[in-house]
Image 1 (cartoon, one colour):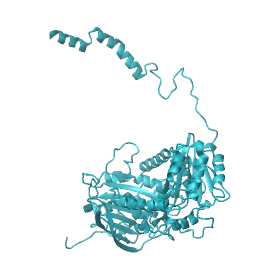
Image 2 (cartoon, one colour; image 1 turned 120 degrees about the vertical axis):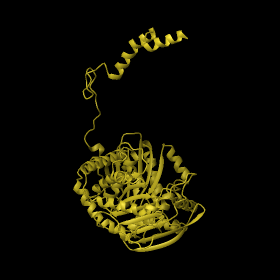
Image 3 (cartoon, one colour; image 1 turned 90 degrees about the vertical axis):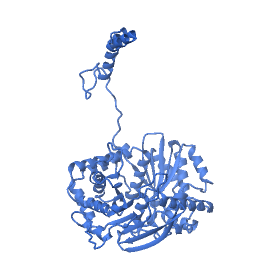
Image 4 (cartoon, one colour; image 1 turned 30 degrees about the vertical axis):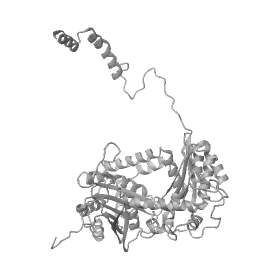
Length: 549
């Protein structure tokens, strides 16, 4: 036992030969690698002596970063952005969407999104299309919004001609068989039921706020197909819509990671002089309506079916106001109970993306920021935005406070979405109206610079992805026939001053609000009170005095 103690003591003191060798050889080697002992006095900002000078890649001017645009004889625009890599993203963007359905059955764009990449004149089924794309490592997708329909394919650049030919066939020669339309009806019905059942209310609230702000016109029309129209939409209705809106002058063929001349050659071969499946008659019923930010009063009452339980849904539209009363206490998808919340979204008209004020509004939206009550934090998470600092950090009972900015070619909508317990709805609404009013007040230079830096960071980070570049090129060329490059947008963001934020916010607050509400709305303030709060100096709701409670 004494021998073991003595050995342990020697080991701790380093008196053994193993300890001496460890101290002699191990420690200096560790220090040399950890502290850079080879060059002890050279700062990191200076080059190391004896190291060859690095040679960096260079580009010949700015033209390699520019988006090249050509208009064909039939009016179709071809836009390309070259990008290093083996793969490319190519697609057709069309000036078509739910905002153009005023003269048609609502829900056509929703149907066309589900029917995309189905059977065509050349391909007998969707499986044949997918097998053709798999030969080039490709995938396909179709997305529709309120004002744009986008068909896109990502594949190996060597298969460019196959991809463009496939896109032309999918867009201009869909067969729209009875079987495909029936399958689409089932898919749309399932999506509508899923929309009502999901715990996340953001898609439903976004739909409601647009309906409230632009009642029965343009971007306020239903983006999702109403249940009563599912059985009414057939091939004739779809072809009638396609005849008017799927015309070459309303299309852009965009490609990223391809050479412009090669894309142009493929476009001339497959899209110039093509005869669509619905005939070549000229468009006669194109809707050119401009979005109107509206008011008015409308109330509807209906029942909705979800998960085997019939619950009562009461919808009101009053002077740009829409509320949906629903039981939110039992929406949990698992054994843990989901908290019963009331969701409020308040919006004000901003501007279109074609106006100069679009950039200040984008900075304002970034400055408002916000998010959920739980966040892991870290750089770039927006923890110093106003909705985090002034709302979520000060009011523990708020589950969510997030700013959104929706912008279109003729209008825009800046919204704040908030969630809280139904018993605190009135206080939650007052907090949001107060934050809206404060946007027209003093803007701190530090928070403005932080918002501008974060916006530029998000812009540059997103534009590193090839599909995002494709969508940016296509949407800009479709709307403006040109494209602002990232460095141009960053220059515009840097030029935003505090007085610009104050000016656009003051202009926004002079308009009527749009309100969407979902959940238990017992304590929801009236629309007139919300409007009065936004018109006041402090954003507070008018006081209510009651004799009996």
